[in-house]
Image (cartoon, rainbow, N blue to C red; front, side, top):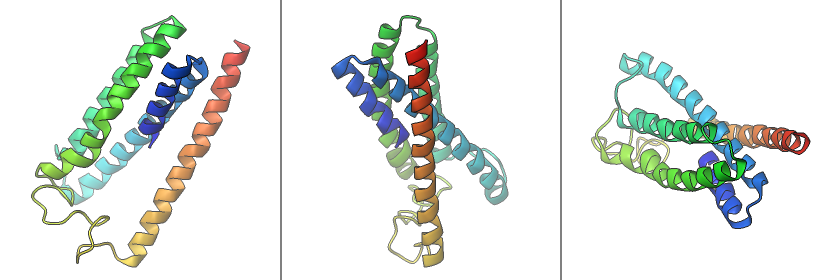
Length: 174
């Protein structure tokens, strides 16, 4: 979601050439990267207790690692350019190209390669969230998952709103 929003703001910047959209795109990518790191770290802790090691080179772990490297490169690009207009243009193009990888790395690759996560190629299910079969989450787990998803989505938008307002005010008074 964060990377999609970043791409949308990047497109807006390229269409309107307003630096406000570059700030919004960068903030969304930044916050998305923070959330991705948190998901990776908590997933590694879960993996240690369920699979015996923090890192198992599972396709989902590996694809998220690649995604993080793609977005770390985005921030390296931004940090290496001083000219605001050039930085905004190049990082907007990069954000659009980077987002093209997100559906493949998050949804496709982990399902076509054998792995430890449910829904991978060697698993006969689509995973407990998507499945309608016997491996489907029970109602209590579905409720907890749905509430957690909604809560983290609201948390993302709340933090993004604060971050956007702060950065836009800072830009206005710099």
